[in-house]
Length: 296
Image (cartoon, rainbow, N blue to C red; front, side, top):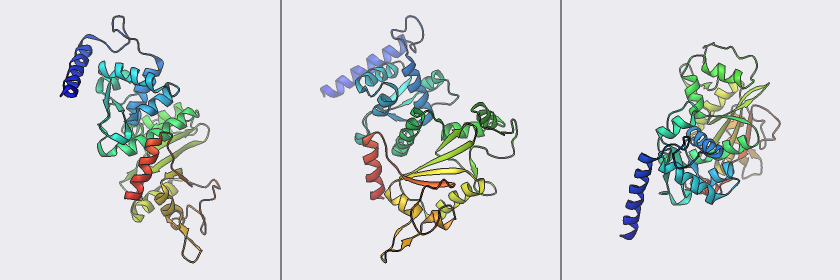
């Protein structure tokens, strides 16, 4: 009972603060938004959901207590949604409509994660680590939004230094890949390679049906788009094969569609398709991905 009463009192206080305090950018708000706060708001909007651990690692040098305090301020100001309902994930955050507007990345607030939580967190883990290495990453939310406005995808690529982009042209998808006469496949992440072009990253935690995987891989092959698949153990076996009972290599879907050389695992020779084991910096996400893959 005391816990319920304490939670209710907290909600009352938080709502009072939302009404009386601003977004941390004006005198009298009662707090001041920092650069790290703004980077978190942008990432939580772009990737959809982050764990508190991911936020601490990316924006506060791993200091979880600092991250927790800043998240509390932004939650009370109505900029973030916060939940600790999924035990393995711990505290997770995503932006409200107000927070998405403040983030200024041209996206609306993401939907609550629901059953997509693990995949969202896996993508955020991969994307944030790529950004920490200095790479430019476009999330699926950014890709879909850019492709929805004629010419915007081309402008975005040109802004990031990708050569030979037909500005204003609308002859088909630039960031997504065509997957049939009227269908496209949306990459999980797009890596912008200045001076070269773009590549895709797919994070697969459970195997798809072979037909669905062939369709996606053929789409990448026909588009001549480099793609890195980061998968759990069952996905890696599905893509690049495994040793058979007789000791000979049984090829996977990657060999079937001609994107991997036959007779062995991915040699990393720099072709269109690379297959790698998925690992997450957030150990809870890493463990849950492995458990999820083997349950399925």
